[in-house]
Length: 129
Image (tube, rainbow, N blue to C red):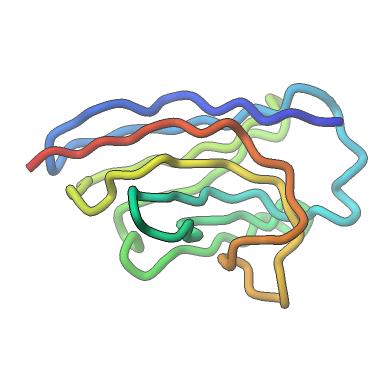
């Protein structure tokens, strides 16, 4: 089964930038039923939420949480089996553990936390004011 490995987290000051990467460790035949890849985050004491996603088998359409639109960009490099999240103009409220996932949307809602997914181990993003 494919494994997802995240990297790129760290600590930055407000207004700074980070780029997260999520690499699939092996070729997968899950694309037929897990056609999305996305980034989810979970802050201490809060529920996990969807941040950004890309429809990998649907022409690369992207989806964003309202609060990150214009600041975050999700992209993919199919040749490298890698998805990226470029995060600019970071805010303290972006502080969270960020997880990448390969998944099928729950109930057709792309950024809802899915029931059926392959998850990475997470990478910490900390933004100080």
